[in-house]
Length: 467
Image 1 (cartoon, rainbow, N blue to C red):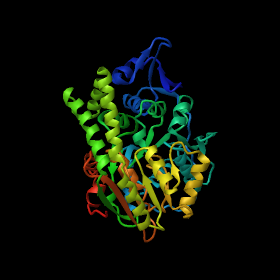
Image 2 (image 1 turned 60 degrees about the vertical axis):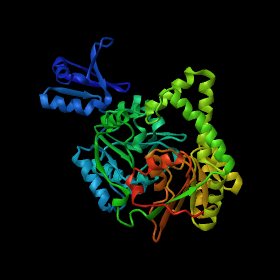
Image 3 (image 1 turned 90 degrees about the vertical axis):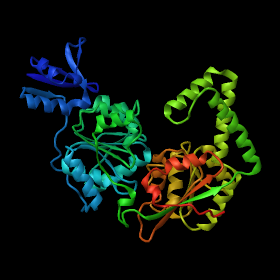
Image 4 (image 1 turned 180 degrees about the horizontal axis):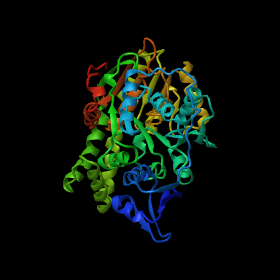
């Protein structure tokens, strides 16, 4: 008879037939001489139990501490859209363990509600931000008519259905990893982080659903996500959704020029930086190349420090400039009365715009009460413009927003798809527009080309200057 127990985020396996089981799936087990038992990751629970059954071995399960929620019922009629039905069926056909890639604003939360209602099992939903924590709790309480537990944001209550920030889940899953049969990872591209992944590794949950508009990152992180949540079972793109699911939108690129002084300073620092790369044979085309650059900076003392300072200076100049600030003002006038979100790559630029035009600025430094007030005023129209660096990229439901202005950002596709998603929440008669301000004679052109790789941009980009 084989027996398993949950032990601080892992599983201990013992019994006379363990040698046969360990030989069948040796990659799942390590023998722990401290307790004279085999040990496995908690997240391998489902795979090991399936192997036990296929080998027809007797098994006593003392790890599982959850039971069906037979009385769980939807309190509101739920009529899923076609793309949600497609995603649900793909997840179901993947054995209730997979990642669904759906655009921001297309109703990923509803997909999770459908899954919870189908499984009727204790559920933990993991999210990256406090805003998403409260949004998910409110939606789940409305649909299931029962108290929803919360971990994070000052809350520490566990219920049959619980929502947690990733950080809080990591702290608690060592003790609660056997309490939930189903885990949902919202914005699951966060999950492969070195610490964050422990929230899923320490859970025995056999049923798993990952949600993200852009789940891919790099091969290493992608492999971790697949291991913890399953393969991507469906991929639905923004341009595949019918009108009414997301707002119609356009993307317009506005090429600008640096002032003569800005251009001179940019070229000077750019040359110092690129000359250093050439001398030390560093080609900046990958994450590894960035590491090599930093290593050369460290190795070369004063020369390296000067090159790194020049890199930062030319980058900041490319991301900013007087003409970008003037264009922001022109667009604010053009869209007076609209709900506008202005995105920047860093806090300094966001605060600069806020000071210059007396606009509210929302960053990770913003206190919770002030943040709540800003978003409420934005939604009501009392303050129709928000400036933010990155905290509005994901996790904020502002369907009123219909204009986005990207002053600066990184080259990553995910960031820009998320920013586009902030203005695509559907409302009757809504037409959204995203402006990208680009300093044409700088490295921002390379950044623009890389972010355009996503199909959400390729068919919607306009190149007309409005200067």
